[in-house]
Every structure is written in C-alpha cells, then in structure tokens.
Image (cartoon, helix red, strand yellow):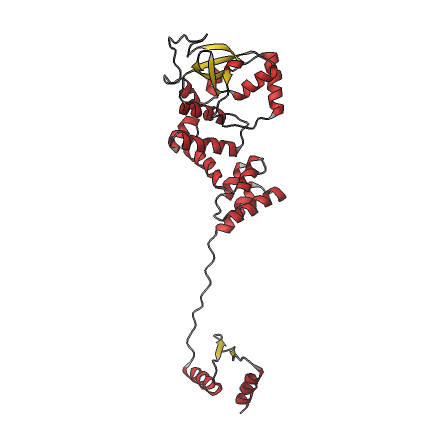
Length: 295
C-alpha cells in the first residue's frame, strides 16, 4: 500500500495525510469512525458533486470490473463521513463505478473528514495523477484548482508535483479557440502542437494551422517552423540613397516640366542610364506632349 501511495505523487499524499483531512475521532455515529479503513456498503456512498471527470471509457470500466471480480479492489476509494452510515465520495469514482458493475455490495474505503474545498482539491489532484488524462483534461483540472481552490501557480505546482512552467503551459491551452481545444481533447493535436500554436496571436490563424495538422498530419517540428516564420518581424525595405542630379541635368528637367506643364520624373543610374517618365491622363494630353517635344 505504501508504494501505491507514492505513485499518487507528493501533493496528494500530503493532503490525505494532513491532520485536517485524516481524523481518527471518537465519533461513533454509524458503524465506522473517521480515520478508519473499512468495507462500506456501496449503497451508503453518494457521488462526489465536485468530480471533475465526466466521461469514462465504457470498455475500460468493463475491464476494470472484470479485474475486480477476479482480484478484488486493490486500492481503496476515499470518502468523507456525512452522518450516520452516510458517506460521500472524495476520490475513486472509476473504481466505485466498476465495483457497481461487478455486483459488489461493499467496497474497501478510507474514511476522511474534509470540507467542500478540500474535497474538490483532493478529487482534482487525484484526477490529475491518472495517466489516461489528455492534455485538455489536465489543463481544466489545473485551472479549477487555481480558480476554485484559490491556489497560486507555485502552490499548485507543489500540490501536483510538477514544475511551475509545466503547469503554466497546460493552463495556457484554455486560451486556444474552442475548435482547437476539441482537437487536443480528441487526440488530434498533441501537447507539443498546441504549445506551438498558442504562440500565435490571431485565433483564425490558430484554427487554420490546427486544421492543417489534422488534415496533413504535420509534425510538431513542422508546426513550430510555421509559427516561427509567422512571428518573424517583416523585413525593412531597403532604402537607396538618391544622389542629387548634376545641376545642368536638373535645369533641363525643370525646363521640360515647365514646357509641358506636367510633372516629369527622371530615373537614372550611376552610369548615366535611365528613363524619363511623363504621366498623362488622356489621349489628347498625350498628343499635346508629343507635339511639344517635337517642336
């Protein structure tokens, strides 16, 4: 049992072992006291209203149910005592559901005392420890711990045994457009894809890239390269310093512009080659220009 506790992570172990949540009391209402481990009738346990995970794989539940029928419950669930032979689930909903499917009447249980916030925190932390959670489920659980349990990012990182950067990266996923979040939830985008896409400010561009990942099977590295190119600052146009025209050329251009009563543009390279551009707005104006030049 000790090795199983360690697998849950330091955060959960600290909560379960806290004096505030593990009380061996003299309360003898009902058959069992808080702090005990006992087999409790499944019918006496109500579901956890704070259970963060709503979707359970039916096939996985069936397999767990078959395992329970063969091997029994290896890891007890955790409940809090509400009153006389009345308990509320804190963690272990998957095990409880599978036990009901297997036809068990009783289930081994840790009995705790916890207020609502502690219940939510314990359920969320236990939920996060599951290997089967996808990145979006983890992000939602982290965010609930921050918002509903009033935890800072640093406090949360200690609770779940992850570094602060990892926690922050997960929570940032919730800023992605809903369509992209669904792609992550459904396994069409990996955490690596999502982390790259979130560095783009425009939501429409994020959606377009996500769709291309799903359609073309782009790798994380390819998406990172796309994002780098999009985020590159635009190249500044090269400015060419114009050398002033020689005085005699400048005088000729002024004379021509005056004679035509039009703006005249001269394009000339350093070798003296170039073009003269004379704009006109109609055929009649063009005829006047040709006539004036021919005089």
